[in-house]
Amino acid sequence: MNIYIIGIGLIGGSFALDIKATNPDVSIFGIDANPDNAIEAKKLGVIDEVADFNTISNADVVVVAIPVDASIKVLQKTLDLIDDNTLIIEVGSTKVQIVNAIEDHPKRRNLLLTHPIAGTEFSGPSAAIRHLYKGKTNIICEIEKTAFKLQERALKLFADVGMRIRYMDPVAHDKHIAYVSHLSHISSFMLGKTVIEKEKNERDIFDMAGSGFESTVRLAKSSPAMWTPIFEQNKDNVVETLEEYIANLEQFKQHLIDNNFQAIYNEMENTNHIKEILKGITINA
Amino acid sequence: MNIYIIGIGLIGGSFALDIKATNPDVSIFGIDANPDNAIEAKKLGVIDEVADFNTISNADVVVVAIPVDASIKVLQKTLDLIDDNTLIIEVGSTKVQIVNAIEDHPKRRNLLLTHPIAGTEFSGPSAAIRHLYKGKTNIICEIEKTAFKLQERALKLFADVGMRIRYMDPVAHDKHIAYVSHLSHISSFMLGKTVIEKEKNERDIFDMAGSGFESTVRLAKSSPAMWTPIFEQNKDNVVETLEEYIANLEQFKQHLIDNNFQAIYNEMENTNHIKEILKGITINA
Image (tube, rainbow over all chains, first blue to last red; front, side):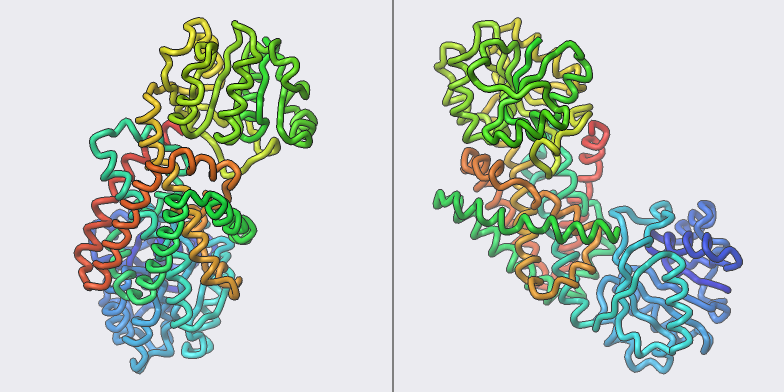
């Protein structure tokens, strides 16, 4: 089986590593807009061969793992070029705009829309790691619009890398993912910004920062090239989450100003049951 | 050497475990406002004996590791009761109000004000762990107001558990710690609140939450009983950090509304160098 990975970074590269490990007969071809990335990926053993779009009709599976703005264009180009029996797996963090862009393509049934909930704050071929997907959730949108035989091929690969599957419509996906992922990233970036701005002349202050700060601000290491188009494509939902988050912060601040420390206590106690919710995540991680 | 730990939770209990491991001849006595905690701590081997204030004049060292509102009262009581050669180590997350409360006490020189930058989101005797302090920073305030011989005794214990020392005045401590610790906690609690409120009827949505969400919201598991008095004592600094954080979030939201995605990109890119700053933290962790 020939698998083409377009975008050999954390997501595409980690998928390649696990597929190769569980399917040794597979040949992994890598396409990357940055030629250095493709060469590095081959050197690291993440892919078997550097390739380009000229040979993509030989692919049994194409995984498109690039920023979501580029993905809209590349998906259309790839749909145009592939064979009738090729499966394209798209793995972006937003869905509605991608659905809108490709819904009328004659090869729509060759495409499967997915969002593997997995990642780290690192990027590029060297960020690719084994077992990234083990036990993680993969959200599949509009499963019914993908050819049945190709659904099966995809589900086999997802099972091979250890993912569990959830089905969701694209509108619900984009709305909920704004809360549980996109807002976390903005919260983290702005926390990092606030502290860096304040402490820019006092680098020793970071000696005072402990693991709590590190954990909260970890996502501020994420790639702007990946995240800017996500926020652009999911703008309406993200603005709504930001408004609710800011309102909650304002209310907390007002309780402080009013010396209403019972309310401060209650706010924290009511949120403490995030423990049980996170326990669920940890079990699945 | 007799060491009394007042408040046998994560901080006091972990200190007891490491001191006992590096100084086997030490006897560890535990005092806790909650008798069940003291019994549990003895059962877990965190302390050697359950004790009370009646015998505290036998202590060579007293570690006060309780919420910062209770600490103000307990420090005064303990200073009244101890022997002239006893060292009291206070380990709270705020300093100015504690300094103000004890500065005129005749035994002020027996007290050392410290803030070990170490912890987890857990609490109680069962949260006590070995090596919590290894490689971590301990901030000491007003070192010059502690008797020299007692400074030496404290520094020996801190070295035994592997901490490195930074000196800072109480006003600077409270101002900077608001940025690198207190704001992170509020950010995390309010993020948890925002998501829980939105998704309260759709628990399956947390299947969509990945390690990024988990990391950002981890601190929302923290104890309200510990954090409410911290926010109360450091109210002015915390309100200031919240105002700056909210202003940054508002600006980010406005860039989204204005479709100014170049600005969104720049905001994230400018914050990305948190990587290098966090690298420093990780090395010390």
